[in-house]
Amino acid sequence: MDYGKFLYQQKRKVKLSQKKQHVMELKELRIRPKIDDHDRDIKIKHAEDFLVRGDKVQFSMQFRGREMMYVDHGYEVMNFIIQTLQHCSKVERNPDLMGKRMTLILVPSKVAPSGEKEPAKSGNPSGLNIPQPAKTAQ
Image (cartoon, rainbow, N blue to C red):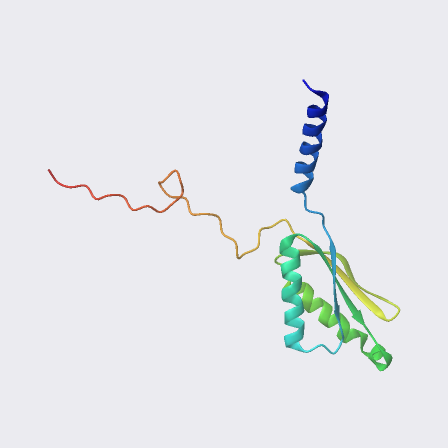
């Protein structure tokens, strides 16, 4: 066997195995304590898409000036996010206030999302719904 051909095949195997891997990325979504309900729901929808894709999501809430007096409202928003995304994620780091920034990190759970269904099993080995021809009486 040609040694050059052997090296080429080894490199190709390594490249194909790396191609199928998904590297988990950390996606950050920034929110404010006075975020509107619709804006919050859009951020949650983006986070759900990231989690289904297999990425970690970090919510960062920045407090400015007098907003520091309403840190409890920030915890309420973060807890709402946790409750909303509990079907597709787990909490890696609970909401924690460091200085003027509160962070929450969510990781995807291993459970399949509720929107995806397994294919229906039928009598067909191919799994397709093909109508059977009607039997004629003789």
